[in-house]
Length: 574
Image 1 (cartoon, helix red, strand yellow):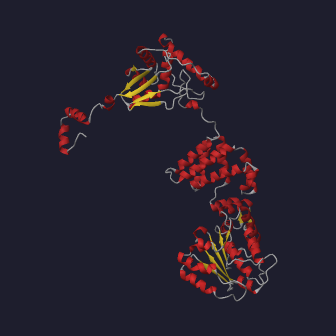
Image 2 (image 1 turned 30 degrees about the vertical axis):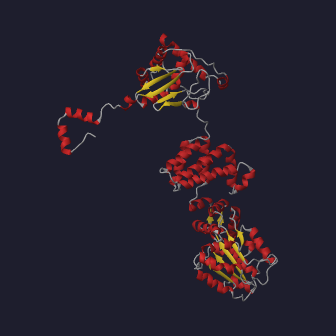
């Protein structure tokens, strides 16, 4: 059986030209070599798998090449290049700082620095993962790194530059390697496929591989080898997403269609289908947020460069983006991102996902009419609502002041049913009819035609009369009717009156109906300055029907054997 070499090693760059996605850095290094302006220390930093160590090896081989080309590349024919290619060169030393990070390892390296190269001009020391060196090793390395012999050159490589001491950084030329773009990775994978016999791939499949690699060419080639083994050389889009457990674009488009049409139930069924395939909920919601982001960048040609997918999928995204308004996408991204943030702390994660889909489906629907909310009726004077409808006069007293100007979209008031054909209720019917006509008036008329202030005097008898009249006609709310018939208003100064109730439930019921009640009283008494105070009678509120001791004594009179039971088991009334 032949020795198999993975693609990441087999197709590792051997020249500056073959390095993928780092053209500016390789050009800088080639110019430094051709102009003979080499620094004594370099620091290559960047994400994993972007070519840091490969560039360090190419750079070390090129500066020792005896016959470099006009393009600044190594000739691969001289003794130095052949020794490097056959891994027998004594001019290039690699040190893995992850496993050799002690002071003794650095001292051994310093001892080798003194020996000049046998072939070539420079002795190059490549220290990989240099951030793993201990503080003592860094300090032991400082002096040699600052002033090495003229024949020595150091190349340090790390994925975490922030962990390297500032004293080390100040002694090196720093080169920041960037993530490799999806287009560059796809192009390189296509080159690898062209070198392999019997391997075919769909463009969309290669695009998924490049996205999964997240900017690292080594990861992309490793995933490529995995997919080749899974598909036996015929790489299709469906096979790639099945093997890599990637959610298909089709699900996102179906969820988007459900969101645009406002169909909640199909969206929940699609979510159930995705979850049944074993996908994690957080991956679903993050993918959906990215999908909305992609739709947003597809709406404008200027932002289309931020969208990195294949050509066929790109056209589908463009068509879908035309049907999605910008404001809807803004809100959808915000909702999906909020679900992502709350996913870890949620106890019912599936319910959170379903609630998010419900919110997304409601974005395309017209906002519910404010008439479904509680309406605040306009007072007779048309004044603006006071800040705070309920203000406390005393710790146990609350002042009820209805708000002023309702909008046409405000909620409908609680309608009061009155017996038909009754002269006694004619005035109440007139008031309700007037309220209904005001509801149908245009909003500008309600805002620009305030009524005059009216303060007609009245007495306590009139107040009680209309109070009882209102109570008699509140037939839908029997509890409110009983409260109003049992709790009579007491007239105070400045057209205020006070109502004493027995408990917080009665207080809350009166407060809920206070807007309609005050409007009716103001219309009947022709006074728009009427206000109502509600307070709880403390003695009545705190008095319980029976205490535990009274209940026990009553039961003891009914059944004397209960006393014997309490004595035997040492029970108490509490």
